[in-house]
Amino acid sequence: MIKKIITSAFLILSFVSFAQEGTASPYSFFGIGDVRYKGTSDIRSMAGIAVEQDSIHINMDNPASYANLKNTAFAVGGTYNTTKLKTSSESASARRTTLDYLAVGLPLGKFGLGFGLLPYSSVGYKIESLATDATQNNNRFNGTGGLSKVFLGIGYKITPSLSFGADAHYNFGKIETSSLEFITGVPVGTRELNKVDLSGVNFDAGLMYQTKINKKLSFFSSLNYTLESTLSSTNKRSISTVMYNANYDLSLVDAIDDVTTQKDLKLPSKLTIGVGIGEARKWLVGAQVSMRDAGSLAISYNNLDNVSYEKQQKYSLGGYYIPNYKSYTSYAKRIVYRGGFRYEKTGLVVNSESINDMGITLGIGMPITGSFSNINFGFEIGKKGTTTSGLVQENYANLSVGMSLNDKWFVKRKFN
Image (cartoon, rainbow, N blue to C red; front, side, top):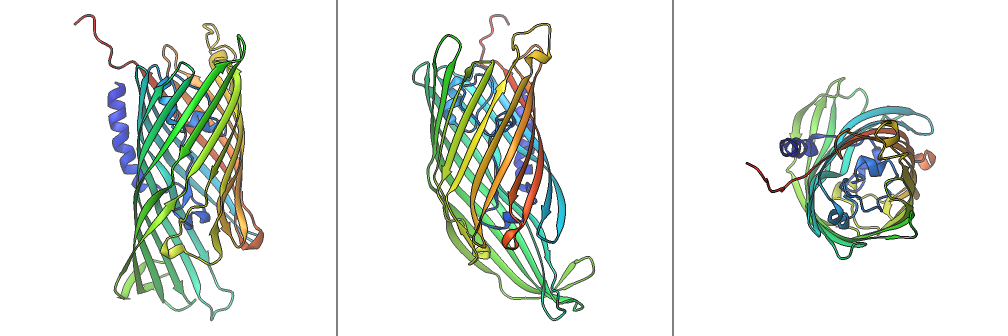
């Protein structure tokens, strides 16, 4: 049954990864859009702490984790997001539902294999700028699309305490943006349409180390490094004169020849280090730091003088608690309770203001009786951006749901 579920889910996500709007942030206009968190909902509920060598959950944050799987693990998850956007004088709200990841992990003795499909970045915004003077131009901007990735990785258990792994990622996607410029009362305006195709390959490698401090306590650590890579972009730009009505339905009047430009973007290198302490299958407290170089992500249509890119930094604290994972009499005692806090400098600078993001996470893991499978629920509230310097502040809440299904494959039958 799990094999049929995996096949169906991959077909669904391969379509959804192209079709869904994964964000409602005006900051997704810049670069290749909002970079999405690539981990599963259980790790996201701990603010991204992914340091334990888990045997039943796939950990996409570090490929070394694949070597620790004992059963085949299938993970799928999605998020419902609601965001309130505000400036110093106005406010608006938006909602999105997205499919976040689909991944499979296979145990192969001392080796482990992981593969999957997930969104990497999302573009989704609708912005209207109306002039205060009737002689000035009005503008309407909107954008959709983003970057997705297919990954394949392998992990190897060097010793019972130390694992090594490496991932290869193929990145692909499309971004479409449109801007309409017009004067109030004049039913003719100018539209610029950009269609960008993105593709590229990148690699990362990781180590995970775990050792006993005493009879109960263990020390956990994780190191992951993503190599700098190139992302090829091809932008087809169309400028035309259009007519519009009160609903802003457009009809073409005249157009100039399309212009196609190509540019290589730089996906920056990234280093993530995490440590934790705890009692296996009981509790864990950890901290994690990730640092990413500035990169070069501006495409021809969003290469603006007031926008630049700096180094990204992310700091996380989080962990989990299980009252008694072996309890036969109380289901509540087998529930996993999770929480965390994170602070991130996103690396985007607009109007000389760094765009920062901070959030608090909570979650629970509900075991499925009679198996190692579980359903994970996560809740996150946070704030991104600022209202100073004419910018937008986003106050958001995310409700995520993920399933981790576990089964034994490749077991030789004793009876036919």
